[in-house]
Structure formats: C-alpha cells, structure tokens
Length: 213
Image: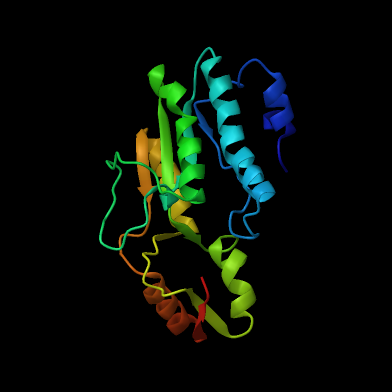
C-alpha cells in the first residue's frame, strides 16, 4: 500500500512555501497530447498541464533551503520538421513553428530560472513513446483492433520513437549519474513513419494503410 505520509497534492504544493525535502523533483505531468483534436481550449489545457506545473515546481524549488535537482519532460517536437537534418542536444536554433514547438519551447523556458541560479536541471526531449499507455494506446489500438495499422500522410517524415521501458531507464540513468541539461530520448535507429509502420505491421501481422494528414 502507498504511504500517505510520502504523498503531496498539487494543491498542497501550491499552498506551501517550498517543496518537501528531496534530492530530485521529476515532473511527469501532462495531458495526453494525442487523444483529442487541438482546439483552442485543448491547447490551453495542454499548456497548463505541462508549462503551468513546471512553473509551479520551479518556483517552489527556488524557495527551497536545499533545492532538488529538477528533471522535466519535453519532446523532440521542439525541433523544426526537416527531412534532411539530424538534430542533437547542441541545437541552438529556434523551435518548430507549430503547436508542439510552441508547447516545448514554453515548457523549456520555464526552467531558465534554475539555470540563472546555477541549480541542477535536466530536460528529456522524448520521441513518440511506444508501449502500454503510450502512443499505441492513444492512436494505434482503435485502428489495430480492425486488423490494420496506418502511416500518417506520405509517411516520409522522420519518426523518432522510444519504448516506455527505455524511458524509465533513461530517468534512472539521469538520476544515478546526475546528468544535467538537454537529453534526447529516442531509439538510435533513424526511421520514417512509413518504415516504422511497415515494421509494426510485419511484427503484428496486420495490414498497413494510410491515415490522411
């Protein structure tokens, strides 16, 4: 059973002057970005669930007597969409000129006060998370239940992905080794959406088809 003495709600954090004593503060908060259409209200909710919570935690960390190492979750959606450019953590150009780029940029800017105070922070830019509860649950299962898996549009766009098990191990690696700064969390193989879907279809034994853009 959970130890209630080790739990704290967002409301309690908001009312407190600082965070409880801890070595690391990991923010996994964020509404599912793939399960609904991006209406204006939906965009506001996605921003608040990610940017708002990050701003709150950063504020409390700055007020803490012993500020913990902050680990936040961004995404490779920060990078501009290109078919002939490979991006790494040293990219210092502008974010993508679309909603995912805006969302990631606002989230990452929320961590800048920690840098200004020379406090430890890490931001994981994750690819599409594959596994139970991840992208396959949000998008593929309704299609897969029909015996199909689908590529999106032309399928020529790069499709950086990572398995949920590797995501967990990446967080553990960052904690154990006190990794700081930007960290890309993607599989080492570079594949397009079409290549990924074809592999998924081959492994699952399902037909592949095209989802219009």
